[in-house]
Image (spheres, rainbow, N blue to C red):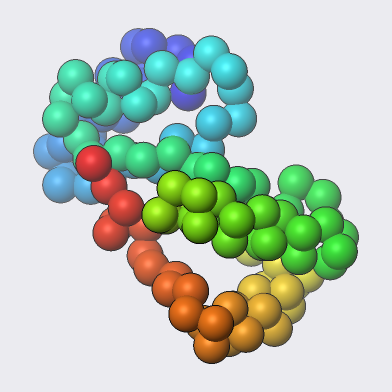
Length: 112
């Protein structure tokens, strides 16, 4: 997401197809959000990466950080990989968090 030319091409395709972009923010040099804004492509960014480490304790701790960020900001975006441990933690803890009043939404509701 640091290559302006590539991101411009991505933005044109997304705009044409009425899609949106989520910047995973894996590089500090990202130009994704600013490029999407130029092309008027709805965009947001991840606030927490849930599973940089494939460890259940780490993933759970990141989920708690996501909850804390949502309390602080009103909403937060967490992303992760399709991994068994990530799915296990989410399946276990999301229902508990929902009972406490937290809402989990599709990222399309978080766009600006």
